[in-house]
Image (cartoon, rainbow, N blue to C red):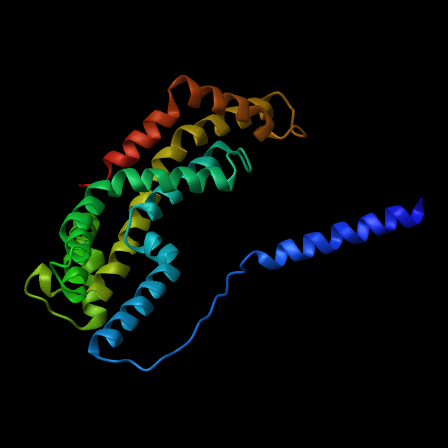
Length: 247
């Protein structure tokens, strides 16, 4: 009986091996060949540039979009509530990403219509498409940047532009990020005020009652959450945050 089962097992093994040999196995090759013309070099450079853009995509998302202001305000809101890690970082970042898509949708539509679509249809070259894509993004940054921050980086770079078009992008981006941080902290300060008042009231009550050993945070947290829910805090914060962008 053992010999029969062994024979059957070997027969099945050989049949499976012969069947697998008939299935073509894909082969992936990556190589470098000599360019046959200027077009091949241009395509190679475009691929390298696109790979670089994809690598720097998270940094670009943070630098030239509304993501910085949104994620900082949401983080300050969590600190003001005193809920430790609630909402979690994943929720805050995810909400900030989708709010960024919402705020930046008009700008990205312009980028697609003015740059991506003409380039894919072959109506414009790569350089023209890049300049066309950069124009709506620069307009968005100019609409949000503060004059003081822009003047600071212009003086540091020793550049004296006559028009907005003369302002270099490498100067506009850090000025834009600084302005976003300044605006985010101003919004965060306003958010902190009502919750700070609740903490002060609860601390004064506990101190007057002689409950020094009881942490005021444990008592004030439910009241802060109650206040936040009663005033529909998420709608107020998100609505005010989106309306703060001058689009």
